[in-house]
Figure 1 (tube, rainbow, N blue to C red):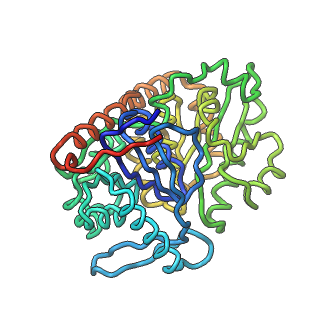
Figure 2: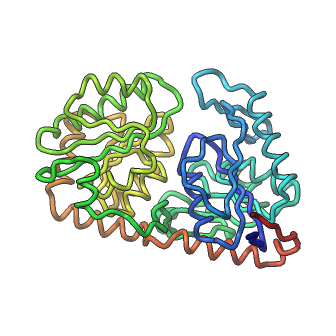
Length: 390
């Protein structure tokens, strides 16, 4: 039987991160009466939803950004030099899809330029907040023209790192892809599922996605694993690595006591639930997911986006939600020492969990869904026609 949807949303989820695709999926789950078209250059990792259709975009190897003097600059994401022709194809495919779907609203998650193009063509547009350099031209143009700026972090955290608080910002209060999951495993269930020794404590390293295999990324992962190796005799140590590459292959040979788990995006909840300590970079996904499970956290910002991650990690440390080691100063000994403190110092563990509870209350996506629905019900979006779907 055909269901009629009163409104439709086009959700652009970029590439190089499943966090953004997870945002689209969760929002669609929270809003069953709205039809979502989700477009991304990544493969679709989730089960199907009746109110969601996935559209694969051509994968570019660069992004194009407006800079201060209003010129276009390419930011490479892959090993080869960024090819503007590939980004042009990616952008034109998106614009063709935008015209074909004719949505009531566009949500850009991320980049800023996609939000700007969508608004330029007359569509009500929301964009997600991006950290760092928010006083530059690209933020000013997009924030001034977007209809809403969606912020995944709680306001307290953003105020720690940001002086540019825009009146259009909507604070979700902290979101995680697990906000709507009603079947999360208990700690005992998770330990059994991942095959951990129940007589030992568990340390989980959420390895960040890196687009370029360069000396700094090799050094980063080697130091973190060397630190884990020092505590692997008395603890279960797991490394969740996004994809098989030359870095993880060498690490597997070098550190036989560490369990390397590759490409298990839809099982990360078991490793977080089982964990007594999580080690990660300072990306939004790893941060909010760890806070969701209230697991004491050691953050080591990744060197390939060092400035942004160091700012966020320092703010988390001031709030008390994480302990931090700079990748500039990291050593196997310092990493092992911080892990041991987080495993064994009951006061530190208690204070960290209390701070994490303030970062995320596990109701962020419900709050975001209400905000989006309110916008869809407004005159801004109401003049678009209804759509039907089988």
